[in-house]
Length: 426
Image (cartoon, helix red, strand yellow):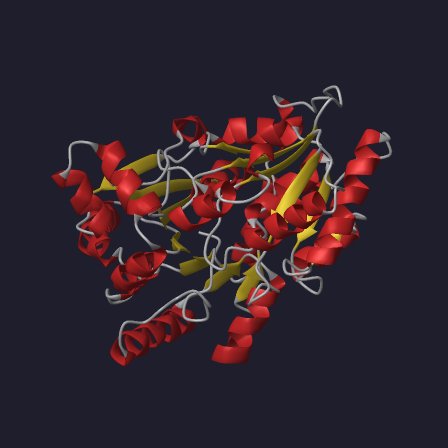
């Protein structure tokens, strides 16, 4: 077995979408001859935990190291973790959190760097790794992996879950913050042996900004779906007394949900909104999103369910009639959320409020999902909503099937092939 050292700040028992990619990667790398040691953070205040994902962790060793980043410090100071989590994540206005996050150099997880480095250096002095890898964000992880790679002369792999300096939601406190961040991204991109990204658009954007030298370095590895998640969650055919429209996941900035709410409010005003529907949102939502969901004229139809463990999230998908997908129009052409592939795997119809010319829209059309409009197109959202509702009531929705090329296991196989093509073979 070859040996990989992975830096993943977000890792079980932490929950949320950020942990899915590293956990599933580690899970299936073992099937292709790679053992993985994971270095992650220890004991922080966080918006959600998913202990069921610990059962899927196939890492050879998982090392939890301390940190002095804000969430770690809060964990040490406050005994009532649930209360401080609510205040920090869900009650603090976004503009305040934005100021705090942007005030740190690189990112607000920079306090993890010395502890993760210390642990990694100790491991590398006693064991030979065939590659070192960081999944980003936080971007601090990339810097840590860079130092380890350079010091011990180990091939470096950088995985982008999100853009770094090209991230439209990233704010810089001062020009110096921006200059330092750009310096580090360029340094890491030049030094790395392999870079993986979650979409073709992300690859093209990195090449355009940083140079053609990246063309052979970058491999697109989609998030995909894990077939094993669905084995124990078969499709649930309920009676059609109520038609369930469901969204499973969190919302971030640019809150695209407000246009969907407005569309349904207009349908109600026009006496066209069906009364036998449920609009279900499963996830942890920040203050601004909760206000939108609770303060509207259709709130009696909306059910908010706090974030659940991943296997239960799959169950909610399978219990739904129609799935809701949101991607902001601004800089959203290359955004491919992890839930897209899980949605596709269910075979359920999807009401997609996403950029019609985006990569996500192209993947949807590949499997004949055509109820697509931009998040701001209220009139088309209304039409698509009613069409899908009527199709469900008339039993006119046929279950679709996605092929296995987007499975987590197949994507991991492509990842390993990318290792080999660049000579990272151990």
